[in-house]
Length: 640
Ligand code: FEO
Ligand code: CA
Ligand code: CA
Ligand code: CA
Image (cartoon, rainbow, N blue to C red; front, side):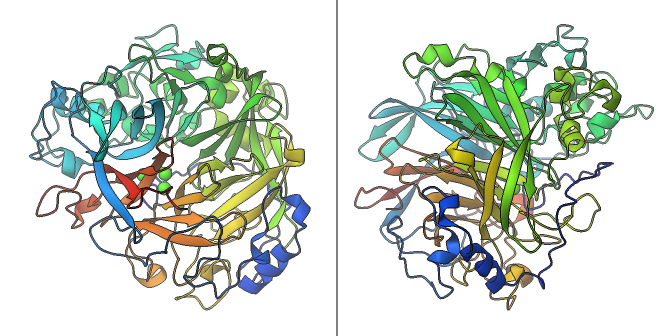
């Protein structure tokens, strides 16, 4: 979604938590004070990482000192194009509406094409994606298609919806899976690929894991509570070493509604923002599955992480309930040294939480198929951060979300593990998880030493009783966002305890003379940005940061330009601007070719809300979400 996740949730939380945080204002913690705090951190707290202050000087400017980063940083841009450093080039791979089958029609910009066309074409609003190699010059790309924009999808801009329009929007959602081949001109889509597949809001899927079959998941059409249609609002992603794709359901609540005035949304669903009004998508008017009064449990069947086998187009996607139900951003899966699969998960809403799943079983590197059900069973935890007054680092704990423990009992409204998972947010509140500034993507360092999560922004911080200022959320009315980093105890990602610090606090040093609004010392006039969202490490350990922020380039955001991608060095703390997107776009979605010489980047919703973009076609063409490829003219590794 955009800067302010357009859904505003007013949850009636009764929280008693974070009392350990002392209120920390900009006055109390200066930019310099932050560095002092960081400098005092013991190096031993981080394996393979150096606290930022040890090597970053405020006057870093555009000079690159990093051994990891080899490109010349670029300035901010407000141009209607993708800008990259000298020696790099940009090629388009696929745009919304492009055919992914040989029998698919070409894109029709009129907004009058039928639903059947969209079912054979690349979906809209490209987001998280993963590449699965088939050989050196062949691969499968799985790409999320998060949502749709009525003004671009329909000639009538959503004013005169029909049943076929709803079907068309449903077909523009989900996941696009297609083969790509490497040619002399770079990677290209192979429309004849045998693995090509569209997964939409109507594709049959299975609910699996501890919540499958629960009464709360049963509907008239599916009394078993296990057979669900479709996935939508697929935000970011994950991938497993056993070769599957994880697509994460985010703002599922916005697709439901009802015209029945007597219907009252249950409190547990209100916590997820479910409302009777459905002005935006209007699916409930033409598809009774989305009518809350007729199918009150249907929203419970969405908000999960879905596992897809990209190598078998006939396979049924599996909704993994063990990973919890919330507004999932991505699923950062790593194999811990103990052999357990650990998945870090953010819930992107103001004041929601950061989670960790640990598989019950262990990964078997010698038998891929034996790992197929690792995400079926395990333990879910929510993060609780601790910090001393004025500190921007501290310790933290993962609190178990298991039925019968930590107050997750019938007296508190939890009757089974299924209910704990279906109502994950309520469970996290019950155990006192820390309310965060909208956790977006999590990325785990390739050496497994640490993990980072983007906390994109949060206007409610400090303005509502349940969201105290402090710890990893140090600013009231947080406009710019920050990236929190944690190092598990003894390098063990299954451990209950961790140390944390902030890799960066974004800010605007050109507008704010000092304090936290200017950002940490690794933020300069040259690299400033707001609202970090997409996040990923490459094999070399470079941290790629994508933004979904205010692109007004005015006032608090003056000098930041369009949304962008930056490259961070975890060792030195340096951050350099690598790419800037076109007008009114978000940069989201990242994967690489196996040789790391082609970077695939998602340019989402250029020209949203009627803004003057014509990307990628130029002229007066309709703006279209597009996956672009970044390569080096000398054929080298991206970023090096
Ligand atoms: Fe789909 Fe939180 O971004
Ligand atoms: Ca988005
Ligand atoms: Ca996002
Ligand atoms: Ca975002």
